[in-house]
Length: 157
Image (tube, rainbow, N blue to C red; front, side, top):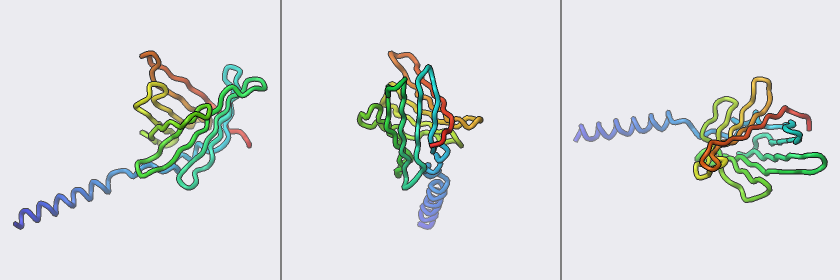
């Protein structure tokens, strides 16, 4: 009986140690480097992406592309913390939001993924050494690897 109790106590201690060693889900504060107004021009299209500072477990974002005097695309964005970690919600053109779970947060680089989607399957954000904000979407189109990438510099409001 003593051996059984000892084994159960040891097992409980091991489980407690494993739970304590498991990393806690990343909080939205870890993405504060994304906050601000970012602008850039790519192939004649003026781009801007705005992110609010982390607050109350979320960040809100907006992306707009303009060509001449016309908005050619826009997207509402949101990053929220849950008990399972962070989720990036993308609503291109105002459509219903699609979730992408945070799968990696390393310093100033974040990777979000939705394994059920073909394109985009992954959304990456990172801060370049020059202070520019980069974003990239990856996945497959017609069975072939595909990606798009953007770069913005910090701008005043």
